[in-house]
Image (tube, rainbow, N blue to C red; front, side, top):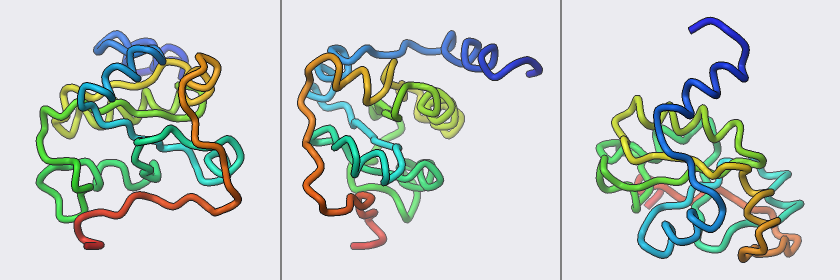
Length: 141
C-alpha cells in the first residue's frame, strides 16, 4: 500500500473500530486487556493506567500470541479483546493492525492514546520514581 503514513493509518483504522478513553475504560471493566506499549521514559514520566499490562512494542506479538511460549498469562484466546495504548494513538494503530494479522481479530487501540486517557480524567497511577518494567510472560514463570 503506497502513500503517506497518514494515509496508511487512515486505511488501517477503517478496518476496525477504535475506542475513545471512556469506551476503553468500560471495555477494561468488562474484561478487555489494556496493553501499554509506550517506552519506559514516557511511563516513568507520565505514569501508567492502573490494570494495564506493559509490553514493549518490539515484543507485542510474542506476548499476545495465545499459542506462544512467551505469551502473557492473560493472552489465552484469539478472541480476547485487546486495547493497545501508546502515547498519542499513532503507534497503537500499527500495533493493532499487527495483532489483527496474528489472528487477534478483536484488537483495537485507544484513540488519542495515554494522553487522551489522562485528559479525560481517567485513573492514572503517577510515577513514583521506580522504573516501570514489562509484565512477565508465562515463560518467565
